[in-house]
Image (cartoon, rainbow, N blue to C red):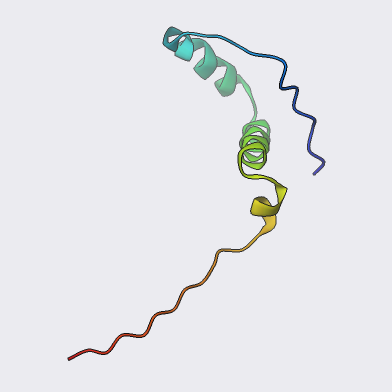
Length: 65
């Protein structure tokens, strides 16, 4: 999936009262479109490598008394 370019010169200002409009918008989208939007936002926030990387595994051995 190729990442679209993010235009950082655009700023959207809203209020907390517009949640009904946002909810109606997202309910009108298909599940595939919603999933793609979540994936895009995750990649923007955490980067491409975090999307394909693995979790670090940590093992610690303790002695029980």
